[in-house]
Length: 436
Image (cartoon, rainbow, N blue to C red):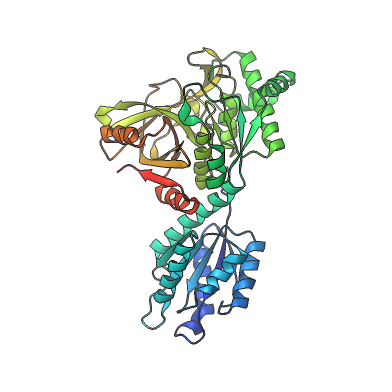
């Protein structure tokens, strides 16, 4: 899965009379040179913004480039309306860079702009540091990444095949709140038509051999393997036709073992598949997949391991192959409980992990985040066991989950991404909570 480019606009503001205004163009070039070393796709407005006309022209240029966020450097004190006029043309999150300087008034300008942005509920952060600060660069990168996810979420479509599992009310999608807060739209997929299309296909034997050669062992029957390839081909066709970014499949119990391989393969292709009809879980998987350009573990929180201060997370076996500790360990076998079909069994690779849980509230959504370290584990559960060790006592983690009223589905990705998720939650106006 390739990294998505992050389109960032660059502008520098100043008031001509102020100390430091004459260095504006140089400062813009210096910041551009720093950011050119990153994977950001930069769109600088190549002259200082010090009039309403400049602000409007800059905003129009940023809109035409469809930037995800704008980084505005304050070379000196400046009038707050310069950035506000820019936002009227391109209403995206703003990164305000204030620079040290006793006489420039840069900090004063950023404070007055921060007041206006807060009052107007415009997503923004204000960074006050040296231009070449590593910490400031990290903040810019994280906020830009979150802005990219916000932009994509506003245009996203989540397919919904089947139904949520009876009794799993937490997985119920709140479509109005989903659209209002995140922007995602739910697209229904007719189960009967889907299954008819699956049964009408001729299995792609060559593709199956290609997949078979990527794993260590195949236990499932040949017939079930080829049926799984038909499901994959049909699902991929629907995703392309309906322009879907993720799919939630009501797999339990009737589609268990039939859609698992598709979830593994499509996750590697950047299309997350959530189990048990959990649209909210699909939303979480999209967020993590877009932040990292990697497939996402789709799990249940299962059982603590007290001696390691860890908790095991897993589902039946639908993880992307790259999540495995070793591809030679991957076994394609019948799914648990039903003893049929094909699912992808492996233990998860070790490393830092971020776990995300998204649940609906009466009129909104809540995002919960955990960070920990995935340890090596045995096949303690027939699926994709992910054994996560936490800094806090695991009992505190469990108590926090109960106290906050969170669900049992946790989406996990490698790396520590809490700050990016916090930026995103702030941008879209969604409550976010983290365990200590």
